[in-house]
Image (cartoon, rainbow, N blue to C red):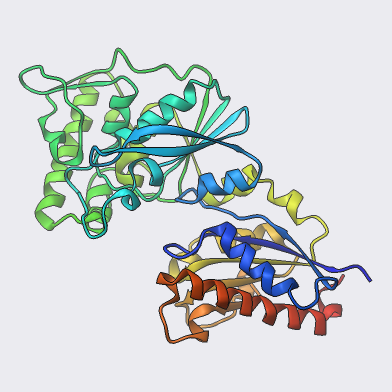
Length: 382
């Protein structure tokens, strides 16, 4: 009989292992004791956050390095994934929280200029589509830093040009958009699952500013700055007010807003990346799908990657492997997930901060799944 075919389609375990590493260690456990009985297909996934470029590279995209200015002005480099027609760019590795020194958040001083620099570089390769992975931003600058890198000029009351950050948006007296780089016919896609507007109690500053280190006073300052940015864009003939109220404008500190100004279309991050990475082709002839993420909680039920995978995989059975399961039950049959295996049930230690421990536990869970498969093969075969 042919081997049981398993598709490994996890997201990253944030802070611990990349999606590729999660898939590798699961495969090690699944095939280790009886490689003739089980074969694995690996498709590391992403939902539009950090790890999106790595997932594209694993799927066959080519990497190229771009020098960027980090969120607080420190020179850095990022990797863009490109396959000749589609470029994938991450906020996380251009203007992201992960680029800041440990314990040193910069809610007012950080900027998205590096993200704009990476977009500028990608456009130089004449792509047909540019995918903006909006997740992990360090800044709340409404994407003004990104726009400045693409040629928009921000001027203070004395007429002096400056690079915007979250804390100086209120200093914008005039915006000159005449030098903004033309996108031509490029399909600009903002991959994102956040529905927040730019302003207000559900906006970028109020909801996500505290996660980036903003105090209550900082939030008020950021909110006032974002409102000023919208007004000045309106005065410059750009649709600031219209875009600010659109769902998704508040994503990534307002980068969703700036992307909309450039004509980007918003797309569900998980669904978009499953399409981009050709999930259905990988699924062909598979008997089981193993997906997962670092933590499964109520947000997962609102449509995060494991549930999207389960919906797209049906009627193929799906099990989830997670770092920690914060849901009340360990089975989600109503969502197409047959069972959940959590690393936290196998150890008293914090595996989220210990990649070696996470790897060992993933291999152990892989062996557990393999044992169940080989002892009940007929239950998963059509």
